[in-house]
Image (tube, rainbow, N blue to C red; front, side, top):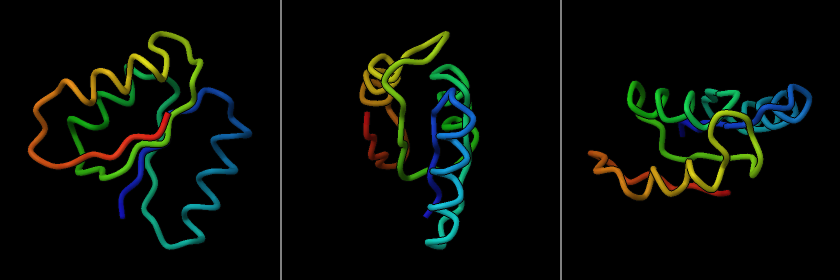
Amino acid sequence: MKILIAEDTPSAQLLLRRTLENWGHEVLYADNGAQALAALAESDVSLVVSDWMMPVMDGVELCRRIRAAEWDRFISSSC
């Protein structure tokens, strides 16, 4: 499964990425919600794991925008 991590803290991002990759997932990552939305538009991500508080766009707004968008696939998001 392709998973997107939206996390601005490098250590948390690294821990999540390594854990998910060890479980066999392909992982993309973004430092904020705006980068995450751009990554979603360019890739076939199925799951988003998002930090609550990030610069530029927080996790709550990211989830709102994911739910409001008309994607050509189902995207599960966890905020």
